[in-house]
Amino acid sequence: MGTFDITAIDDVIHGRLRLGIMAYLSGSGTAEFNELKARLQASDGNLSVHLRKLEEAGYVVISKSFIGRKPLTRVALTDKGRVAFVAYLDAIEKLLPKHGDGT
Image (tube, rainbow, N blue to C red; front, side, top):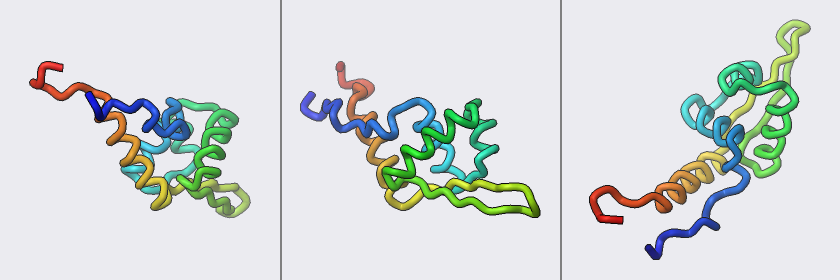
């Protein structure tokens, strides 16, 4: 049981909504704000707060532009974010018992 280390869990990613953002972006690479909002069933304000936390950690980059007069916000996973997400998943996996080893 030497690999069980709860401190290895990245608190920035571990929140439900932030985990959802990271998981979604790990598959898509980039997403529009409204797409994330719909997929994660989040409010504008709640999603913005969690995106800001991920951005401050360097895990996502947020770009804002306009299509005509309509604002468009895109979120992309950074290389640092991808590495952090894989490390997070590895840390979670180490907390789980292995199948068939009696633990």
